[in-house]
Length: 317
Length: 248
Image (tube, each protein chain N blue to C red):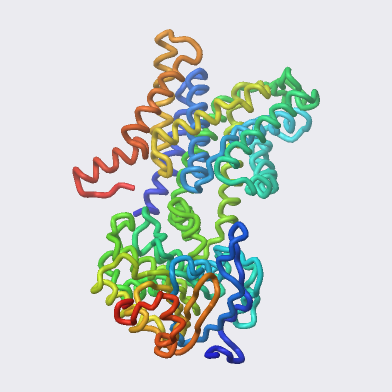
């Protein structure tokens, strides 16, 4: 049953991503790619904080690194852009191992702020050095030449199918015994280690996966914009989006961040098209977060699930 | 002394732990053997729970050594000690609220006892049955009552298949009939392992343990056959002269 569900998800995701890539016009594809990127980012922050219990305020570091590595790599070599798209998350994942071993010495709030500092340091470094783009940033010129194709269709397809694949992978993972250990750690890391779980190793694993996912998100997003700057790539707003949609939707669930993302994008698009300028929608998002956290501290999806359970007596996970 | 044998299953020598300069456990020597069940009593603050913490690895000893079957566990992390064969049922049940009772037991069965697949499933079923939790197997742990949570905490320790099973006040907060159920369970668990039970309820220990350790102010004061230690004037003195039946 579950296996069928996963296959259906993969096949359906593939078909929908392919169809979407052909049907929609570029402006819409740009927006939808952003939606997919936010979905991926949210799921990664959710994995790290919601399931792994490691609240990080610095995931924008990996997002920015993902974008920059892709630009620097593709611009300065003849290796195709699409190869870099695949390689970048791997490199960032490798970098996350030593970083994790260092920042794990910080606990809880110190870890959260420590990661924020890491992101700020990276922003400062990329802004300071001209060979990294400096304060002017970098334009995407694969192999030194201007982009000859419009990447939106392919990027949307990769992002959309990638997101579905990530969901299926997470579903499989959470069903495994390693996933069960992570679900246990969500309730109590101490109890998990008392059961023989190597909590530190699990933390490192989740940290690396989340770093890779955020890097992939950064790579995908900045291919569509064709331009990257440190002020944009390492900005805190990326983190705030991940946190908001995860917490509003329901931390520690796979469905919650999807609901949160849809709400976020709908509110933003509705307000922007109604003529509210710039970041006004953040006020609404902030107010919504406060209301949700007051009325349903576990987020919207657990609320819906409990309601459904009371109505039908059936548990939806 | 009662425990001066050649090859103990678990041997602690000179275990010490201070918190901010105040000694909580002071140079405790302890041997545990397979088939033994040892009760530990002592006033509040005597260092009983701290001693268990040192054995299980949630606390790091300032001094002393811990050897199990010839392996030095002194610097070993909690999760590796579980695999090596030491498990504790904690005073406050540390259950996984959002996992089912069966899933709560699968974790120690897989990561503690090192079982896989069908073997792990069978063992979980067995522990569920043994601990009287079979009917609650599919219930999320957060919906359990206190007795069931205490049972689950005990079952989690058992599911790791420890050679040394440490029980920290697993009877605290329960009614007398409930404590008797827990005693019944602990009696079943004695075979093939060493059980060490810290408890404030003397009748529970008396019904299960044949050896008794008395701690006071971080030190091990008495250690020997249960009735002998129980009758010792020093024990009476620690409890300020309160006669046997009133303590019980």
